Image 1 (cartoon, rainbow, N blue to C red):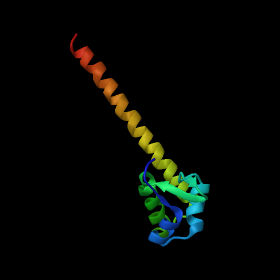
Image 2: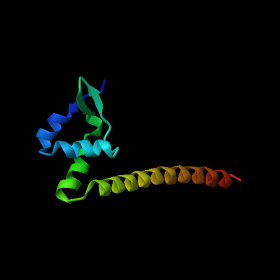
Image 3: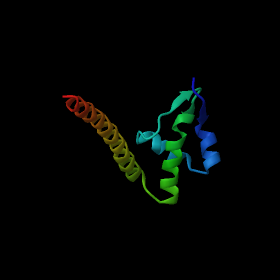
Image 4: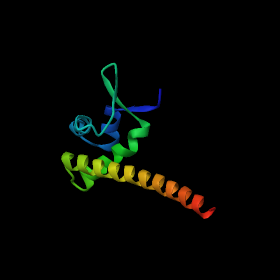
Length: 100
């Protein structure tokens, strides 16, 4: 099992409201595991949690805004991967025709 941190610890460490954490979960922005009625997120998800917390509390972006930004950034990352794959394919095709 990967290392994880509880909702209560995150609320205390980051000085956030429990409802904000729960809203992130409800909006599908955080994946949680439950054990003995305690909610946890994995350490792998901490950077995303910190990003959402900073955007919400420092930039005053509401939950629907966080969802939109997250979706757009995910789509941009997907497009970067596809672009990289296409460049590799184009390079392979170009190399093939240079040999002719």
